[in-house]
Amino acid sequence: MNKAIFLDRDGTIIIDKEYLYRPEEVEYFPWSRQALEIMQNSGYLLFIVSNQSGIGRGYFKEEDAHKVHQRIQDDMKSWGLNIFTAISFCPHTTQQKCKCRKPEPQMLIDLIAKYDIDPKESYMVGDKTADVWAGEKSGVTPVLLQGQSKYLKGDEKLPKHTLLYENLLEFAQKL
Image (cartoon, rainbow, N blue to C red; front, side, top):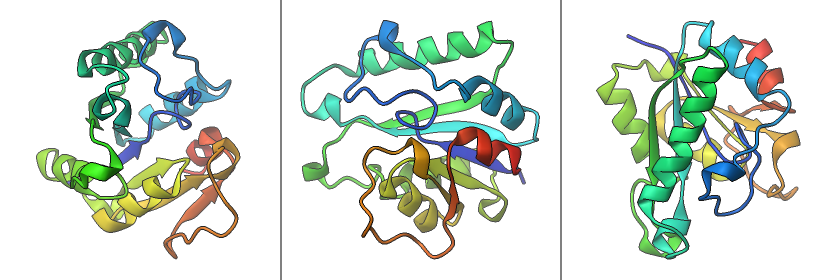
């Protein structure tokens, strides 16, 4: 079986710009490249799993999300990286109560099955509690990037097995 790292997109790999849909606005954290390089060389399959409710809200189209993801893949290639096995996203709003929107685990469950992934050897990394709960519900180790989040409130309940790191590079260096 494979081991994997599932990564949230906005606020984890790239700077969260709320409803980002224009590829030219993609901006990385100063440590994104180094962290992704470490992860690529660590023997894990890497995936992006992202909520994109801007589609369901009518702010942008699904094709816009694909263009942003293509920009990210192109940037990775320009850095000499070819790291994302797949990119999965949920286009629904919270009101639609779908099974794929994090904190629900369906995106991860589908990728685990499709790519023969061992959840016990895998991580879900993100900057929001929805990310860590999706990890917990899918059986992978949840990782919260505290220093990268602009959404955390001090009283939010986290799964008891949640690993806490300041940023993506700190997590990558501990693999």
